[in-house]
Amino acid sequence: MIGPGANAKKKPAKKRSSPKPAAGGNGSKRKPASSKPRAGYDGAKFTKQRRSPQTNTQSEDSVLNVSNRRALVATGRDQRRNFSAAAWAVRKHLDYVSSFAFQARTGNEDLNRRIEDLIRWWSEPANCDIAGRHSLGRMIRIAEASRTIDGDVFLYRLRSGHLQGIESDRVRSMYGIPPEHSSKKIIQGIHVNDWNKALGYFISKRGPHGMGLYFEKYVPAAWIWPVGYYDRYDQVRGVSPMAPAINTFRDLYEVLGYALAKAKVGQLFGLVTYRGDPNALVDHQESSHEDEDGNPRYEIDFGLNPYHLDLDEGDRAEVLESKTPSSEFQSYTQETLALGLKALDIPYSFYNESFTNFSGARQAWLMYDQSAETKRSDLRTLLNSITRWKLAQFLATNLLELPAGMGIRDLRWEWIATGIPWIDPLKEVLADAKALEYGLTSRQRIAKRRGEDFFEIAEELTIENAVLEGGGVPAYGPGKAAPPAPAPAQD
Image (cartoon, rainbow, N blue to C red):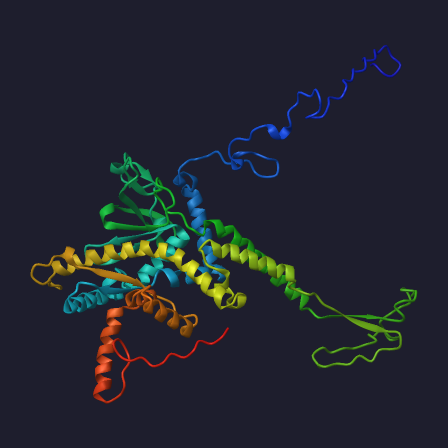
């Protein structure tokens, strides 16, 4: 072993080079570091401060494969089932997106009434739902709720004229599929062609007590209406818009549980008594809170409020308390909840009405209504398909007769989204009146924004005015003198 003082040769000292002049100095050939050109996207570069960028660009159906989809759907349903904030967000989303009223627009008043009566009759649970449980309005609401949480849902139109709702997890590829379907291209329960167009659906049924799934039947795509959220062209199955907020809601749910446990502990009333002068040095071995007989020196009954402690000279008492929740915790929960609501484009002011003033609330509603309109358009497309299917059945069964020279392609109708009440009725009515005065809108647009039909309102006003004029009572309405409008209140 070679040690100190042995025949070990000492390495020659490394020759130091003289320091090079700074960049930009006389005779320097080095370029400044900033002169090196930058290329590419920063989001595609790896740094130690953040995770490495993703390099996988596979299809969305491969990213959210069968097992991942099952976990995401189950977690989303659990959040809605147990966390009130998540359940409220879904319900509020449905209130703005999934409520519609049907209006016929054929130009023939008698035909309009007949079509509206037939649609209203068929929309009842016994005529619409094969299970006889849900009306058409409720089926649309449940369909929107299902695609919001699960990603997609399917409506199966039956030869009997009824609809059957097929939940997302019932469309799947699984064992038990007949051999004649083994050669088909199937993506998570949907038979597609080379362009990923749906050709058929493999539907499963639930086992006893709703447990387990077993293959039931293969249904051609012509009988199925898919309803889902799609963000990519080659996407076959829908993905829930709440997917980015699932962990946010889970964390908030757990944190609120911990905060509740801490608050409960803080509510346990405690009293500490000190004997003698607290500033003096006390022999703790001789100090005692008991008298000579071993009984507590002070007996306190907190149930007798208010109470008074008559302490000996030099003794003192303090109450144990915990200030929960802290202001930092409240700020954290507010920001976390706001992030979760953003998954559905819901403003935080919807959750906390006192969060902003009138102007802020109206601006938040206008921005949200713009987002909601995009989601309503999908449901309008679904309702138009259902209406076209039912009108064809009504004509085939002679429940509906068209005037001579009119066919089913000549029929017109509209599904009007239900509006919301005015935030400030006086201000908004005056604003609409001014817009009409300057020709910036129409009565039909104003009524449609409120979920009403202008022609129906005009017809009702005509009848009411005729009754009022017959009784000698002044009437107001289209073509009538309106009463003077009061001056708007100052903010």
